[in-house]
Picture 1: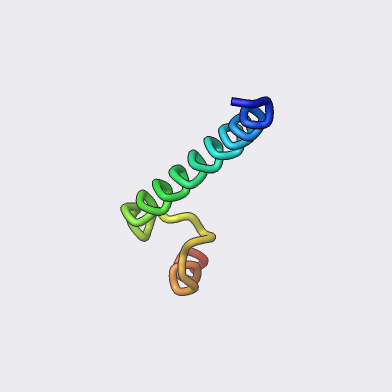
Picture 2: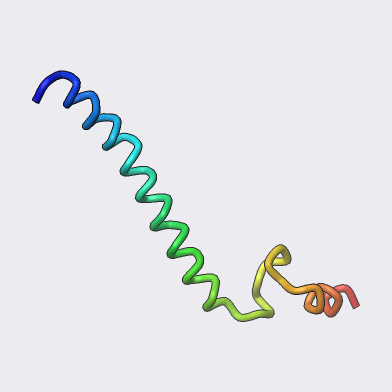
Length: 56
Protein backbone atom coordinates (compact mmCIF):
# COMPACT_ATOMS: atom_id res chain seq x y z
CA UNK A 1 0.00 0.00 0.00
CA UNK A 2 1.37 3.40 -0.91
CA UNK A 3 1.44 6.44 1.34
CA UNK A 4 -1.71 7.65 -0.38
CA UNK A 5 -3.40 4.37 0.49
CA UNK A 6 -2.57 4.81 4.16
CA UNK A 7 -3.79 8.38 4.04
CA UNK A 8 -7.10 7.41 2.45
CA UNK A 9 -7.56 4.48 4.84
CA UNK A 10 -6.85 6.72 7.82
CA UNK A 11 -9.37 9.33 6.73
CA UNK A 12 -11.96 6.68 5.90
CA UNK A 13 -11.51 5.10 9.32
CA UNK A 14 -11.46 8.46 11.12
CA UNK A 15 -14.65 9.68 9.46
CA UNK A 16 -16.41 6.36 8.87
CA UNK A 17 -16.32 4.98 12.41
CA UNK A 18 -17.77 8.09 14.12
CA UNK A 19 -20.39 8.41 11.37
CA UNK A 20 -21.41 4.78 11.78
CA UNK A 21 -21.58 5.21 15.56
CA UNK A 22 -23.77 8.33 15.17
CA UNK A 23 -26.16 6.47 12.88
CA UNK A 24 -26.43 3.56 15.32
CA UNK A 25 -27.05 5.88 18.29
CA UNK A 26 -29.76 7.80 16.43
CA UNK A 27 -31.49 4.61 15.29
CA UNK A 28 -31.45 3.23 18.82
CA UNK A 29 -32.78 6.51 20.22
CA UNK A 30 -35.69 6.53 17.79
CA UNK A 31 -36.49 2.92 18.63
CA UNK A 32 -36.39 3.58 22.38
CA UNK A 33 -38.49 6.75 22.07
CA UNK A 34 -41.39 4.65 20.80
CA UNK A 35 -41.38 2.70 24.09
CA UNK A 36 -41.75 5.75 26.36
CA UNK A 37 -45.33 6.22 27.62
CA UNK A 38 -47.05 9.39 26.38
CA UNK A 39 -47.28 10.90 29.88
CA UNK A 40 -43.48 10.52 30.34
CA UNK A 41 -42.45 12.05 27.00
CA UNK A 42 -40.47 15.27 26.93
CA UNK A 43 -42.30 18.51 26.21
CA UNK A 44 -40.64 18.98 22.84
CA UNK A 45 -42.08 15.72 21.51
CA UNK A 46 -45.53 16.03 23.10
CA UNK A 47 -48.65 17.01 21.19
CA UNK A 48 -50.42 20.33 21.64
CA UNK A 49 -53.29 18.64 23.53
CA UNK A 50 -50.89 17.10 26.04
CA UNK A 51 -49.28 20.51 26.63
CA UNK A 52 -52.68 22.08 27.42
CA UNK A 53 -53.51 19.35 29.93
CA UNK A 54 -50.27 19.95 31.83
CA UNK A 55 -50.86 23.72 31.95
CA UNK A 56 -54.34 23.41 33.46
